[in-house]
Length: 109
Image (cartoon, rainbow, N blue to C red; front, top):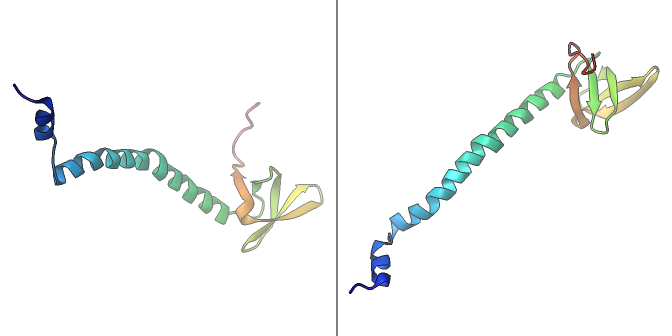
């Protein structure tokens, strides 16, 4: 008669094979997360930073606080935004959340 415990111990990998069989699924999950989550997010971040760095006078922007306006002056770290006629505010470039595409049509048209 064979003892099931001895069979299990004999079939279990040992040493490097055991380590690899335990780490391989974790590496596979990491690679999947990298290509599905981290990499696209980094790409979007780089595109956003490029758009913010390229802000120029006359662009429509949205700030992090939700203010929408037209850029009237651009500095190294700040922009001046006209949010209403003769109402201008200064905002840091890093707080701009979006540069509105002037050729885009409104959703309700």
